[in-house]
Length: 277
Image (cartoon, rainbow, N blue to C red; front, side, top):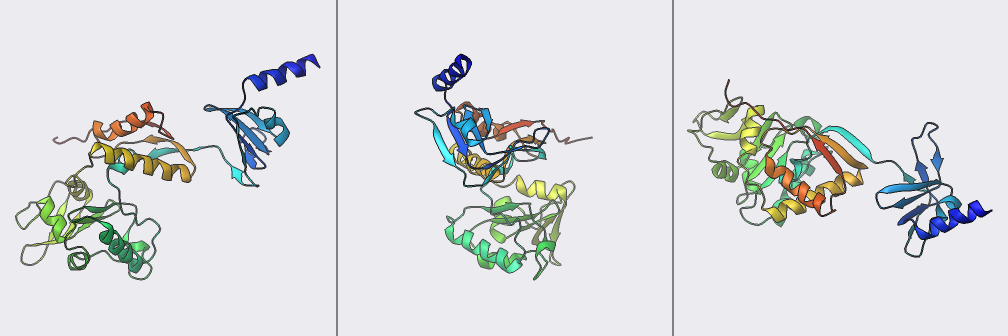
């Protein structure tokens, strides 16, 4: 009896910050136990069990959330990703868009919301084959008709990038531009660029032409991106770097981590691309 009293006193003196009740807590222990509630203090889980178990840790300032039978899983860890570089632009994403018609509608909507001269980019995450209605890319004339005043770059996986006239001009790509290493700038019979730059070296060449955001915009992009990862259950990842990734790409993450505002953990290796033999 004295032992139980001591435990209760300890709980009352050091309550949980958050308690989740009435849920399906997937513990992934040896028995794959499904619990009812969980109590959290700081960054630590301090109790898992039924509602009564975790409510013993309730204090005056504890936030109690009724899950209403919803499931809670441990945070997922992605063991190979390139997320560090992803927020360098607030991309127009085409992941999961199965209609080319819908992709064009998304582009039109983005152009309407954009400032004149603002770059509109999609750096991977889709391929022409995903469009069930019309599995092909985006010709220069079509992009120019939609976005005459905004540079547009739509990169399909790592295979090729589709550019409009404004993007070709801003990137300095014209009839006299030689093919970059590992790339081919597609040209018509007159020698003018068609708006398609092919090859892994080509997508890297084009991506390097897109201006990077200022510090505040980069921070905002990282917050938004990590929030999207959290919504998918991802709370940590290993980052494999990539072409063009520099110290700047890590600064925004470090700033938010130092402030206690980064809702994920990232660990990484860096890659240095050789420029000569």
